Amino acid sequence: MVEDACVGRVAAIFRYPVKSMAAEPLESADVSQHGLSGNRRWAFVRPGLEENGFPWLTLRRRNGLNSYRPRWSDPARPDQSGGLVHTPADTELEITSPELADELGRR
Image (tube, rainbow, N blue to C red; front, side):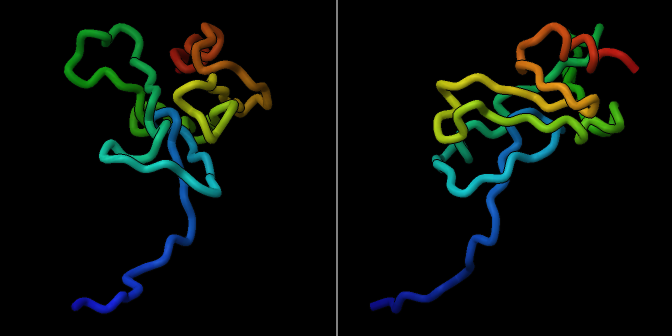
């Protein structure tokens, strides 16, 4: 018989709705074999590199990308809610907004 033993404690949970943008702090999260629900659900593609083997816009390619703070409009149901991004200019845009894509495509 194996005794119950504490092997660790969760101090904080963070989810990244958009690849390379800031984390979304959570109080709780659904976890499956695929990871946290709603984690890295979105990513932006570098302009002109859609057919590239690694087209993703990353912090390495776009300094300051982590200044964008994405969140799910309903954190408990990311699969059924829209995503919003708080920009460094203090505006909030939908993840699918052409304005956001244009802003991220500029250098």
